[in-house]
Length: 107
Length: 469
Image (tube, each protein chain N blue to C red):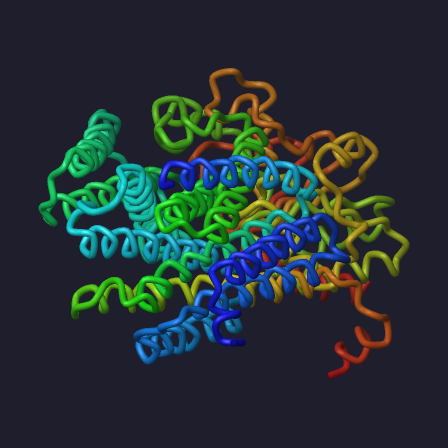
């Protein structure tokens, strides 16, 4: 049972790698900074690891709790900060309507 | 009834599938500027779904602690992301990347503790978990050094241990792998994993310290890929498909991006890691005597006249523009030139700035139209037909030595052929060498005139002169 679990996870791992390759090769140079920042936010998903260990109560005791608390803080910074920064960057690539841009200049 | 449905492991698994589908779909949105904003938000939605799914168990423990962690993380992350200047973006990404790596390493450490040194789990769990511990720790410390260098908290110049660099690094990595092997073989002493994390931490520090500023984007991208791979490994250890897919997507995209950047600089990832341009100090020093050529300084008034009567001006921005926040002034200047009937284009080198696409982000912030930004291959043929090239704080990406001088450390790196244009104006703070620490014969070219000073101030002076014309 354990082994088949490992094998199916490895299959997912390999397929995800190819999907990542296919998707990313199409991104133009111009958008590389937001891409880096966006993928950066996505690996913040490690926060799930911290949460799941706490939710399951698998690791009790002060030291474990402290380490997992820091992990959740770190993961949250990674996720929230990453997505917000990417959003800010991408907003700038949006072509703004002319009048809005003028209004911005006058303000 | 409902409770038992939502806490069904299969329901959670389905939510994870929805969530990683959104990651993939969102990332494909990043292929174009129009769909990119939505793509990023879809990925964020996927993340929210994944986090919620993680709470759907029959018995949920430690809620206050988790909420506290999320709140603290939000309180730190949101203002940091909202307030960071666009020019400081590379170090912000480095920092966010670092904390992600740190989280992976901490999670692995707790897994070790709670399983009694992986005593009660299959061997593969131990292997993947220890891999994520090593790579996470390297990424955390490496990213922190990258942040400190870019933020100029520490000197950006390459620092190496000299000839000891490679043996020491190899020793540290062997030590980390050896400790991991000992743990897998059945040693349950917690000291082992602490030493493993420390060895990886030292390796992370030593990996990034020798790297000069020009190579920094490559390294940040590499560390980003590392954190992704660490997250994927943690996902296998924790049997969590969302982590596996998301981590692997990032690991793969980061690897491709790193390769593309290294190619754009005509260097291998290995040689970048082995030591920055500073490593070739011998040849850099040897070429220093060629800088004896005369440098012609010019004034803002001359520069303004030259450009105002040109047919075509190509602006070549570099890190100097980012440092002095000159992008808005540059935009105003190009508007004035266009009113005078001058065609203005921007030539963007793939590794200009400290991150790929760094210049594009800054110029987009200043509302420069997307179609005025030209990539290297597109614009290189046009320099011959250009009256004035205005180089704003770019250096190594315009260095003709990369084409002409086989013993130059940057020989072979594709450059912008700025020296082919009729005349060149270079805005620069001083005659100091660029981040690569090598001389640029462009500056002593008879066609070149230099306008010394802070880039933003210089551009503003040019604007004044243009208005007065």
